[in-house]
Amino acid sequence: MDRAQKEQLVDELGQIFESSGVVVVSHYVGLTVAEMQDLRARARDAGGSVRVAKNRLAKIALEGKPCASIADLLTGMTVLTFSEDPVAAAKVAQEYAKENPKFEILGGAMGENALDQAGVEAVSKMPSRDELIATIAGMLGAPASNIAGAIGAPASNIASILSTIEDKAAA
Image: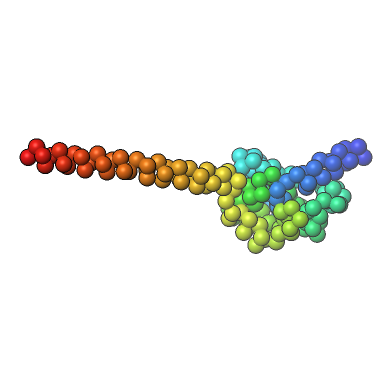
């Protein structure tokens, strides 16, 4: 890899560290190519990505970035799992680590907040952006349906009372 390629890689990594909602750092010693492809596919499906980069270049890219605290985690064979959604990458990494003991989560960062293994696990248990939007939409729609039911209720009550009076008059 020549100097220009290294500079381009540092720029790409810098953009990743700056724009990602969460970055998870893990060791992947012993993973096969098929297992790594499976991890990449899961991350892509969740709206995230997986990147293997040289630790030295990643540390250079981290300088001055909000998540610079993860530089200490970049030792050995590391892989970065990241996403714009602050929860997606953590969920993917946590689920994959449960299934594959060769994949070990070291920690990560969520903006300026450094995360240890327990922090990544806690973030992975949070609802995703899409789940939160669905919950909020449901909450916004509930009062409208309650109001519609309340408005319609007196009319149906009056109709049933009139029906009862009509039945008594006929009998």
